[in-house]
Image 1 (cartoon, rainbow, N blue to C red):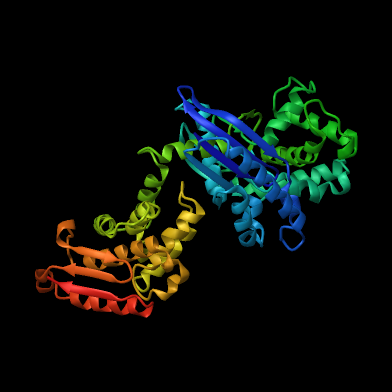
Image 2: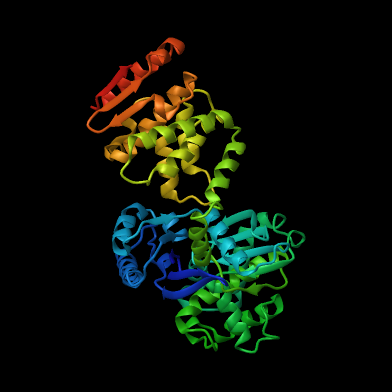
Length: 484
């Protein structure tokens, strides 16, 4: 059983799901319409009121989660926390309230997860589809076929700001609507060719906003009830006819949803005009369902992160034989060091594979370039936290250890750093490691015992080990090397 929490710009939402023979069955849902995006002040900071509302919502979610025996939980935050200038201060408070880590995901990762949710609900392997998700703070366009994502673009336009900017005071008129639509078109015009009708056969709208628009059309007898361009234009006219947001009365639409609806209609009309979309299908699937499926896949050989690492290796022309040598060696060394948990096992393996990716930029200080690429690249399936951990490991593969700061005080992380550094040394010395021929301990001090013939056959090894001893000495860790 898995849980997905979505800290969106419009609402915080929760799904608890369980896989069965029919797919992923959602057994519990919750929603808090806290309008986080509207809680950003003019400087881009979350206000105290918005912060408090968010924390109270997360505490309610924590109470819900406590009632289930969960195999894994993932909480993701989207556009508002991507851009909030005090997100780093907010995050620890939010994680404490929820009781689980929270990942601020990129727009591209958000799009991938949205598509995964849709693809899991529309099992048509050959269908070429465009998925659009209009959120409170951003809009994602995802092009794919079957389960495979081909292109993801995230645009910094959402329903909250569009409503606040173009319908101030809740006034709705034709001029404001046309300005809001034109603004939306300007955001999407460069993507028109990439997502043109020739690229897809069907369009799905995965967000709550699109579903609300579909409900407004269907439940209010607008046109034939489907979500097409003609009916959307009629909905726009009806909204203008009401004159004010607080005067809008539509069957199936709660009053508090009207503000989001108005901004969403403007964005959707702009999208349909710019991309040449005549009709789309609202679908009850998206980010949260995608997160649930992603959690389930992580427990299987189909973990998306494995493929992403291979794609990264190819993208930056990494020598795969060297990468595999270091990954296998540091895996062996890490097992010998006996970490207390497996927290760093996979991040260490992936970091080892990617440790030379920075060579694509420069031979000089390549480990720093590797660290930067790993932390800032869009690597599908990885959380921001995972990429930051992998980046730190890659940065620590050589050179001084002071740059790792307080992270080195965590024993298992220090063991992972040591394993990677020694694996890189053994690569340079051309040593193929077997577990039986090395002894390694790390508690209050590091103790390494190696075979005497290694020194004889690999002249540079003693030099590298001496430099390594000096590096650990700089962070007050004694490193003893014995030759047997």
